[in-house]
Picture 1 (cartoon, helix red, strand yellow):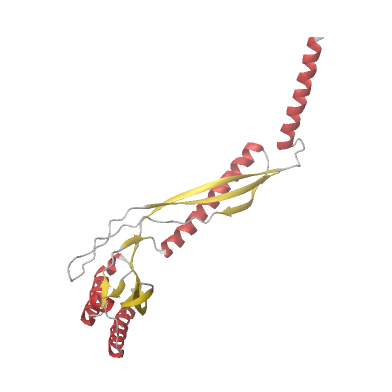
Picture 2 (picture 1 turned 90 degrees about the horizontal axis):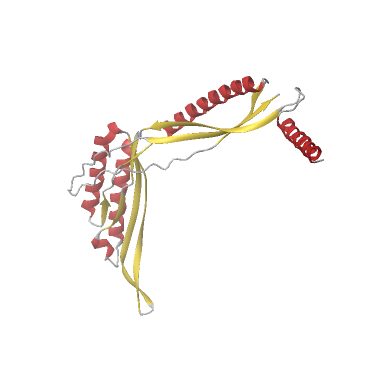
Length: 247
């Protein structure tokens, strides 16, 4: 009696296992199945560009000057137009919009005039062989600002970054390598399953990079001699989800 029940249980269990197996690998050779796999390609890139953001602010004289005459406003405008013209000559730095605004402090329930603020900035990007040209530009900008007396330039530091062009080329190469990996996987799955397998779809993940900025030291002298920062390589990994179908 017990042996009979045990045999019946084994038969039921074998039937269930066989059913599960046939759902993943169909008995009918004309039926197919699909599955997904993540593929990766990593690469090491060295930063090839250097960026900085020179800023300008009010001097101690301007920051405490409550009344600003038209002549003084015109002096600031002319100086900064000359600074913008310098930047436009070599195309290293872009930007240059600026603002002059009165400042106040709060005292006994009312706003009391304090002086004026000045805000302006440029975005600069250079390659390694443009360092001397960059230093000359920064020094000429700082000289114009100092001669004005109402605005000052804050000496920037350079940080190393990977240029958009290098990232674009690396992206294309990573996609090509993942396509090769997908084709190799397709061939392997065809061999293992004894079926015709092919790539049904590939979804690439848009990876972003936030490189750790490495700054060059600022100079404390009147003449700025900015040096290039020490750089290290950045690991970039491209991911794709590949859908395979075998029949």
